[in-house]
Image (cartoon, rainbow over all chains, first blue to last red; front, side, top):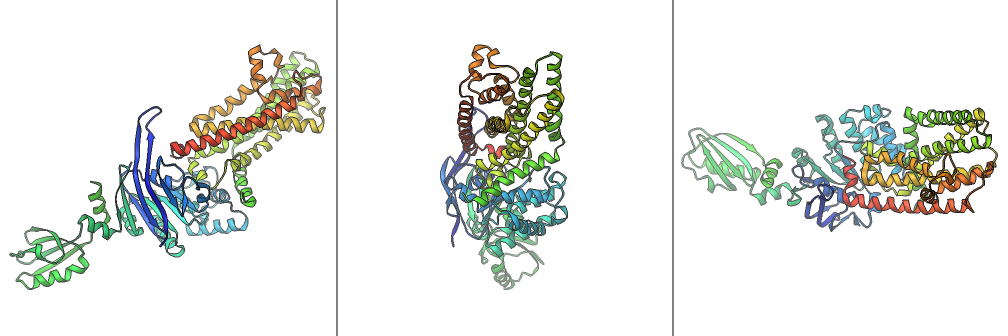
Length: 312
Length: 264
C-alpha cells in the first residue's frame, strides 16, 4: 500500500507574545499514514493536534523536519499539493453575507472549477449534506450544525485525494454527527479517500479510524490499531463472572488469557487479552470445578481506556 | 499557469467582492453619499471664496481624485479583511491561489467602483460647478484614471501586507495611508505651497505627477519635466515593491502561524 503522509522529525515553536519566550508545540513528531485509510490523531487540548494537521495541510511551516503528503513536500510543493487536499475544521467560519450556494461557488472557483462542472458538484454536495433547502440562506443565518455541514461540503468541493478533518462533528446534533460519520466512511470506502482526523470524541475515532495516534504535549506517545495498542499497553477486555456460591479456591490467574483478576464476594472481574477467544475456554475450565457461574458480563476494551492509560 | 483555472480563481475574488458590496448598504454610501458630500462641500467653498473657473477646476480635480482612489483601494484592502472578519483566512490560503489572483480579482471590482465614483463626481462637478472635465480629451482622462488606479493598487497592496502581519488592526491603515498620501501629493493645492522638506516627500508619490499632468490641461503648468514618465515609473516600482512585501509577509505568516491565529 502507498504512503499518503510521511512526516519525520516535525518540530514547531511559537512565541507566546512579541519578544516573549518560545514555546515548543511539537517535538520531532514522526508519522506515516497509508493511502485509503482513515487515521485519527487523539490528544487533550493543547497537545499540538491542530498545529500538526496545519503543517501537513500547508498552512504552517515546520521549524525542523520534513513532511510529504501524497508524495509532495508540504513546503516546497505546497501549491501543487493544495490542488489535491482540503480541510474542514470545527467552528466553521465563512463569509457571513454569502449564501450556502455562493460560499460553495466561491471555494469551488478557488480550486479552478467553473461552469457546469462546478454547478454539478455543488448540487451533489447540497444533496449529500442535506443543504438543498438552505442553499439560499446566508451563512450568518445558519445554525451551528448547518454551518458545520457546509464546512464538510466545502472540504469536498475539489474532490480531494486527502482530507484533513479537525474535529469534524463538533457542534452537530447526534443525528447529523452520525450521518456525517457515515458519509465520511462512505467516502473512504467508495472513493478510497485518505482521511486524517483529529477528534476528542473517542467513539467517533473508534467508529471511523483504522489506526490512531496519541499526541500529548507535542509528543507522539503511541500509534497503532486499537488491538495493537491494547496489546502493547496490557489492556484487555473485561469479563465479570457471577458465581452461585462464591468462587471457591479457583486460581483465576491460571485461566487462559487472563491478565489480571479481582475478587469481590460472589463476583470476579477478569481482564483477558481477547474475550471473544478466551471466554469459552475459561467457562469450560470453571465448569470442571464445583463452581457454578450464573451470569457473565463482557465489556470490550475501548479507546477511552487506552486514551486514559496513555495520557496519564 | 493554466488560463481557464486562473480565470476562475480571479473571478472568485471579483464575484465575492461584488456580492459583498451589493449586500452592504454602506457600499452605496461609499459610492454615492460621501462623494456627493465631498463635491458639494468643496464646490460650495470655492463659490464662497469667489475663485476663478480654472482654480475651481483645480480644487475639484482634487476632490474627485480623493474619492476615486479611496474607493478603488478599498476593494483591494478588503480582499483579505473580509476573510479576517469572517475568520476564513485559512480556507482561502488552503486553496491553490496565488497573490496575483487575489490582487487582480479584488482590484478589478475596485477599478469598476472607482470608475463609477469618478463618473458620478465628474457629472456632479460639471452640472453644479461648471467644471470642464472633458477638456483633457479621452486620452488625457484615461491616462489620469490609470494613474489613480495604480496609486490605489499601491495603497491596497500595502494594506494587504499589513493585514497579513497585524490582522484586523490593519483596518485603520486602509484609510490612513490614502489620506496621508493625498495630503502630501497636493490634492487641493500646488505642491509648491508645501514646506520644502514635505515637497521632497511629495516628489516620491506617483499621484503628485498624475495630478500635475491632468491640471496642465487647465492652465497650470507642471513643475516637473515628464510627469507621466515619473508617475508611471514610480507606480511600477512601488507596485513591484508592494507585491514583494505581500509575498514576504505571506511567507512570514506561514512561518509564524498568523493565518491560523486570524482564523480563530
